[in-house]
Image 1 (cartoon, one colour):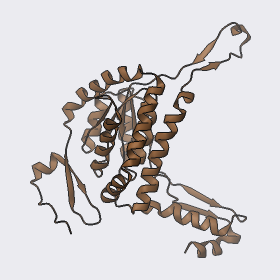
Image 2 (cartoon, one colour):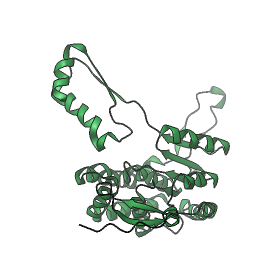
Image 3 (cartoon, one colour):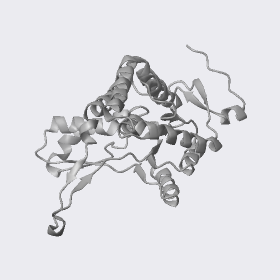
Length: 302
C-alpha cells in the first residue's frame, strides 16, 4: 500500500489543489492553483492563439481532433486509471462513460465537422426579397471558458472542448478542484496532438478561479454543475453580457407504461438511477409506473 503523503501546511494547501483518492483518502498529487490576477493574461493569450487557429482550414483543425482521439486511445488504460483514482469510478465505468465517450466525440467531429460547418443557403419566403440571396455562416465565438464538473472528468469537458476547437475557438478549461489530474491530462493530450500554444489552457483552482475566469471576459462560458452555482455563474455572465450555457441539476423522471417490457424497463431504471453512484445530471430520480404493473415492476427492480 502506498504511504500517505504528509499533510502540508494550511498555506501550502490553499496554494494547491489536491488529487485525492476517494477510496483511501490518500493525496496522490498536488497542482498549483492559478492566480486570479493571471486570468486576464491567460484569456488574452487564448485570443491571440484563436485568431490564428480560426484562420486554419477546417480539415487541418480536424486533423488535430483525430490526433487527439488517437492519443487518448493509446493512453486509455492510463486515463481510465486516473479517472478511477480521482473520481472513484470502477474501471469499466471509467472506460465506457469517460474514455469511450471522449473518443466518440473526437472522431465524430474529426469526420463530420467540415459538413456541419459548411455555409448554408437561406431562401427568403418574402416575395419582396425574391432577388436577394442569404447565407448562414458558422463563425467561431472566440475564447470559450469551460468550467467542468468532477463526475465525468473527461467526457464532460471533452464534449465541449472538441467541438469548440473544430469551430475555430480557443478554450480555457477550469476542471473541478476534485479532479485536477484529469484536467491536466486533457491539456497534455491537446499539446501532444499539436494544439498551438495558448489555444487550450488549463487553469486549476476552486470557485474563486472560476469567478476570475468569468471576470476576464471570455466570449462564452460553458458551465456544468449545481443549480446554486449555476445561478451565480448566470448572474456574473449577465453582468458582462457574456453568453453562457448552463447544464445544471434536475429531477429527471422515467415513465413506465403497462405495455413496457418489464425486464428491460426495470434494468433501465436501476441503471439510470445508480450509474456513477447516481451522481449524473441525467440520473433517474423519480419513477412513474402505471398501477397495473407497479408491484411486479418494483419487485424486479429490487
